[in-house]
Image 1 (cartoon, rainbow, N blue to C red):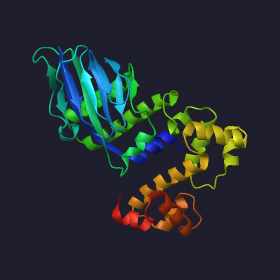
Image 2 (cartoon, rainbow, N blue to C red):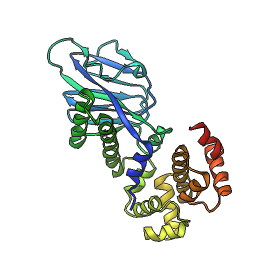
Image 3 (cartoon, rainbow, N blue to C red):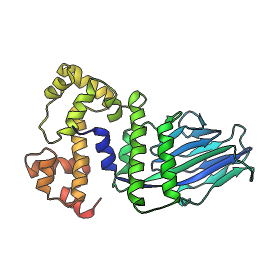
Image 4 (tube, helix red, strand yellow):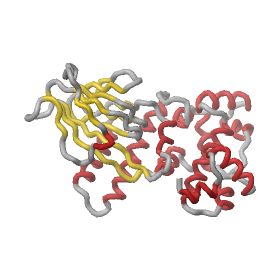
Length: 299
């Protein structure tokens, strides 16, 4: 059976990350401008404050992992921050530029973290924003710390197979963060649905057999719920009705297939449409452009 999380990460096509070591000592405050793409931070040593615009401030301790799916403006600071923060534009900050020290220069840092961003081959990496909370904070993320350590070693010391290793590690980091978010902390969406013992089997079947002409009744049977109970529970937990979710997922898959230059008739069949014209109409309505134009523009 196809695993929905694996399918989502495969669709995003993470290929690499860029990262920097960030350290602090004494009193410091660093204000990052909006980045708009998924970014992460793993605390390697010490503790600090993280204030993300629009969210409650959190304390980060050694071993904690943070994922910001859309990375709005945020501030990292000591507990007695400097009066004037240092302003950083992450879009112009190069990766792998060595350790960036804030506060008191020299000596052993009191806080050490690895911060960076994911790079995707997918044309629409904002898909991840619809799946996760605005701030994913995983305390004591031992498994993630191990992955990040491997990623950091690979990033700082490239060896043969480097690109493949970076893409695999980036994908594993995303899955680990998504796994944590199925525990009820996620907003309505796929991850929240996968945390529901009744809805998870239905979602897994939808992903495994996306070309099947599913009905709400058939999916309700998979979930062992009545049709009305399934429809209400799915809509509330996933955020959209079952058929709307299935349509959206089919269109995401169709966009990926069209970027691979497959014939429109083949794409239609793979995502569950009996005719090319029916698929083209649905795709145009959902995406805003005809399949042929989408494939030609490669977007």
